[in-house]
Structure formats: structure tokens, C-alpha cells
Length: 207
Ligand code: GRF
Image 1 (cartoon, rainbow, N blue to C red):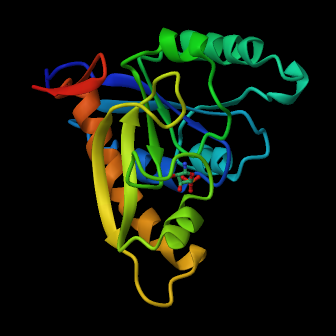
Image 2: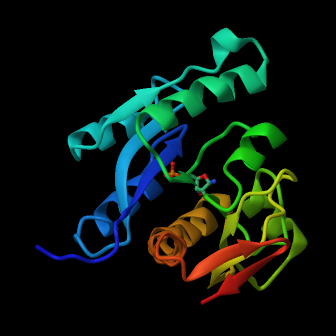
């Protein structure tokens, strides 16, 4: 038995197909990976990623946001309770399509990360690949960042770049970026879970 440091109990929050979740689960399989994926939680009971997580042997849960009728904090309190019951230490957003309130973000500050499909601070919000094509940039990519109350504004932990090529449309560019997301997110999660990347105010400290 190895007696290395305890692995961080990690939940992945999804809303859809969960391809980033699958890559994280895969990366976290070795016993020396600093995060252990112990829960996949969705706001959408029908999310395809839940079945994929269950197939991989990960516990799954759904907290449907719809019955909360726009009371975002009540919805988040219900999610938070599921995280607490599962003794979660780190929360990883992977295609989670609900905007989080300052209550939840503050509660999980420094232990809550997200992947965004652009080179932040460029192209916050949705339709990032369309935004990149319309802006005519030569390079695009993805960013993993700590979550802060302001949307897509948290300090960046890691980024990966791709070229924008002649003939690109949104789908082609999204696929090229997604390939990088699947590599970048496990690396960034390892940095955070091992304590090598720490949130300190508006920046990320490396140890
Ligand atoms: C990814 O492009 C991610 O960056 C964005 O939503 C997409 C989720 O894809 N936030 P998947 O569910 O991980 O396949």
C-alpha cells in the first residue's frame, strides 16, 4: 500500500454529454493521481454524461434545477447538501450550464474550478467559437480557472492554444479546442488537487 498524501475527494458537475468528465475520470484512475473522482452531479437528470459516469463505476446524482423555479440559491443549497453527504473537497465544473450565485462560489472558493472554451480573458460567456471566428483571431483555445462570483473572470490556472485555420466553422474549431480541453483539464486538476496551484486573491500562486 502506498502511504502518499490523501487524494482529494472530487465531484464533477455536468449538464450534458460529459466528454471532459470522461477524460477526468480516466486520468484520475491511477492511485497516485491527487484527485479521486467520487461523484458526478448534474442539474439535468437526462444528461448523457450521467450514464457514462455510472458505466465507469462512479456514483452519480441529479439535482434538477427546474422545481426550484428560479430560486438559484435554494437549488445550490440542495446541491451543496449532496456534496456534503459525499464528503466532497473539490468541485470541478465540466460543461455545467447553470450560473452559480456568490453564495455557492464563496462557499467553495479556492476549491471550485471550471473549464472555459476560449483563451480568457477573451470571449467570456457563450458561443465562444463563434466569437473567435467573428473576431478573426489567429489563435483560440481553452482555459481552466478558479471560479469567482463574476462569470468567466477567475484567475487562470492553465491554458492550451489551437490555431484557427482557413475554412474553419464553429464545429471544426470547437472539435479542435475540445481535444485540447481533454488534455488540459486533467493537468490543471492535478495541480489544484496536489496544492501546486492555489487561489490567492486575484491570482494563482504556484508552489
Ligand atoms: C466544453 O466545451 C466546455 O469547455 C464547455 O462546455 C463543453 C462541455 O462539453 N464549458 P462536455 O460536456 O465536457 O463534452
